[in-house]
Length: 292
Image (tube, rainbow, N blue to C red; front, side, top):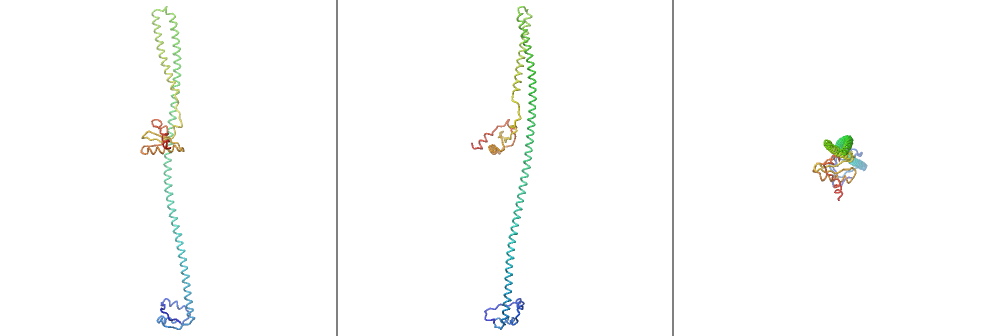
């Protein structure tokens, strides 16, 4: 029996179509819908079938809900994985962009460094060529000086022979002077004057010989490796410090030198370019950079 219920569920038209699935036909649905508070006689079989149908539908609903939940969970997981992949792709794109910028920057620096090194090599080659040319010039000047000294030596020997001959002649004249007349005395004076003039010429020749000998004994110009050493020079203050790659104290000294002269015109040069006319400050900046 169905009755004694304070509120009966309303049966909608959509539900009626489902209710036809129930095999029993003893349930007066239309009457129940019109008078839900009234008691009706219904076969137990119909009630059982009706309940079984409801339970089957509820089971299908539960299974469908479970499937929906599973699909939603899978959707959430897939969306999470997709977002992670998107984030990873964005990170990779940023890294690629950073690497491209870094490559371009390093490539530009490398090109600039290559150009700077090529310029320095050319400057060094020009310096070496100039020093080699100067060395050849000095060799030629030295050979010329040697030839001049040899000629002067031969001339001095000739003067010595002439002086010896004249002195011998004077001695002979002195031995005969008692017998000489006035003309011989004048000849003697003339000869003595000639001796005096020749002696002056001899002294002048000797002085020239000694002067040339001193010049030839001066140290020869050498193409020393030191002339090609690298230096950091301030064109404004006319000062420089030596730079030795790999030597920490020299590196620190150069850094301090650049800091002190940062508002001036500072350039990297060879020692031969600044050793004349520039003041060396290497030891001073080494001590300052070491805190002494």
